[in-house]
Image: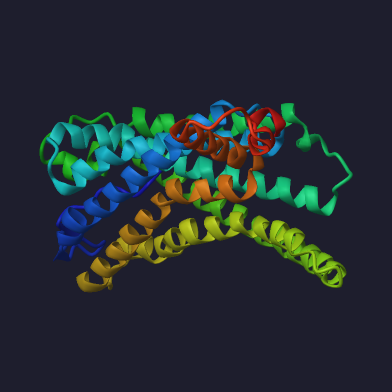
Length: 339
């Protein structure tokens, strides 16, 4: 599903070999991924606690909970990537990463991509047709759609794990492709194209959705300008946080993969340009991984029950610390049962 691991010496399709500077991948990126892991673990653990106490009363919350599970799994895959990229782990761990955890890493990334697309469509329908109800807007449909997303990516990723069945050795694990059978290589290529298609489809649909939403928000802004309702303007403007997070995290990686994939098959591309494209691809992959830290922004800005639950906990903790008396009006309003 993702790109194969690269050796320090690579060859293009003409057989020309060029040395790859591994300083960035062995030193810089492990540090950057460690920061993402620590921050992602804290934020997603807090989000898990909050959402555990929030009932699934809307399609939006159902999709957010599924994104949270996906992000949490992706976060747990990062230490394995850090150890293997830095060269600190044994070669057997690299074999495990090639066969399983790298597949899960990319799997969860694309699950998040599709779920963010579903959230965008949900916001689109609620803004364009605030009083209408489509079948996709009921809770059962949302749960079925989220379940189908998980099943689809599980179905296409399992062969990637099963068909990485060649014997692992200290030499062969340097390149994950060496562990794949011929059918495994073809399946991997097919899944890469499928995932590219999924991303570009979601991106185009989100662009269309938010173009229409922007038009509606602008029309509403003109209507409310005389009333000077700043609160309402802020609320409507916040819906764009989803597209912003999606585009900043995932678009650079998919833009860079196009020339990078071409560099792997080009007969005339020199090693220096190949190395630059490799660093660009790795840099944007790290940016895609930061999605596990930016998704909580969606919870914070758009999910009122989440904000109320987290804020209520902080108020409660503060009151215990200063030994204040009975519930105040603020406590009552912030109570999760009032969400």
